[in-house]
Image 1: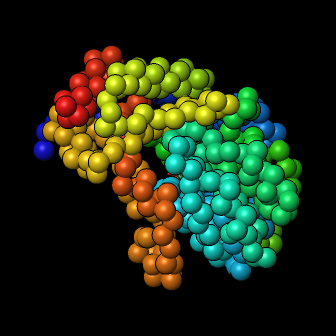
Image 2: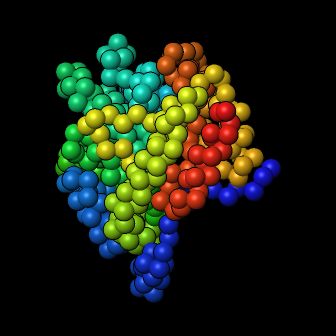
Length: 365
Ligand SMILES: *Cc1c(COP(=O)(O)O)cnc(C)c1O
């Protein structure tokens, strides 16, 4: 295999993050402490929400958010099959059943027009995924949720700083969950965050994060140890100062790729909805003529990392097949065969971007 010259993802860790970690290490307070509280406050402020509840991963944030909303055995949660496993897993952890609805072919996010037919008397929540850094059509989703008295939990793991109609993702539903895994738009190493304006949900989330305990050594519900460390929070506080500039770089890189690839008929560059700020967690193109896998190989041969997010709809995973899922959603089925994500991260140079464009043009000729 050729050496990868341009990687698909690369976190930016600088002196500020390193020094912040050293400071925490020297303080002796290395588990959940004052840095976590500060990070929760600052992150909530960033998205415009009242409360932030930090966790040790994006997955645990989703799990805790569902528990905080009272979701469990016998309940159904409507979501998209075109997402990372964590979205579905978090629903399964609670004992609830994920119900998969097809996606919009332009944004790859859940199609609101298909939600209503999936609602039953067991439905408790909708979990849209703000995929690749772009929001789902939240007005339509919130309208349905209101009519059917459902809770909306955004999976915002890929969309720090993204906007929908002038409002930040993370402040659009009843709760939202972020991930700070190293490939995401900002990182804490591992880490996650719930944001909400609902005081009760915020209180519940804190209880489930810490062994179901509101008062030390009193346990009323089954909780977990999903706490974030002050080491992670210290990294997060520094990253938060840079997230807008990281996103600006991603957006500029996407624009450069859009322009460079505009006349390549074989591919379709990402579509950004008018009222959305896309922060390009992924820059995902569609490839026609069944040539996606071939193009992916060609890019690897040219030292360009790339990714297929996601090659298999969740309902087609063995885990779900064995649970009896037998589904085939037409748009999802088409999209899993067509998408390819190219490097777009903030560390890319113009030279890297030119290399990507050149390799794709070469292939398309
Ligand atoms: C990354 C991701 C998660 C999970 O986050 P972790 O921090 O890796 O646990 C959940 N949902 C989506 C859509 C993601 O991309």
